[in-house]
Length: 261
Image (tube, rainbow, N blue to C red; front, side, top):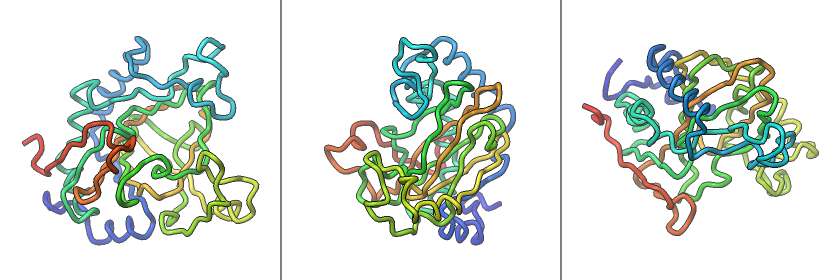
């Protein structure tokens, strides 16, 4: 592997065509185990800031924070400042070099979006409908990349990611979307899109890059264990957040592939 250009031409072409790329075992088992230990401790201690399922209001979520299951965490926010292990992964030189290849320019980490440990709990963890990350982001271009690190095994059974390959290139009409910018299940054209969706099977240490315009979803966790994933979002230096928007409310970190050297 070339440290300056770790992705092959075939991998770059696959990302451009499909809108996602899976990098198996990119993170060591030891690093994943340590991040999982930190995550579980922060869940037990309810270390702020957190987002609870009851705050999101998705179908099947507890009605309030004081109801049964109301304090089920959906994500640990601000992963970057929670522990050095999360920061080190966010600025990992190989990761940054890969993103620079895909973006064709210097890479920035946004702390305004994702920047979290996603947790999918049994019983009260809700499903997420088909959506694009760009739905609530405000950047000059729809050209960001989300980076998803599985800390444990992810399957369709425990609420793992589902993706619609190539959907970042689809021309979607406003009538296909609901008020929260999810694809409406009652629209015939959307049913055809749903049929193209594929579930991902990820092992601990697997990493997924996916385009901010790619439609993805996740089901409920039908297992007995919490599923945990570290998620960050990146953009090119020529694609800044729109001033005054939510995307501009947190720090943007300009990265180098030599970061951490």
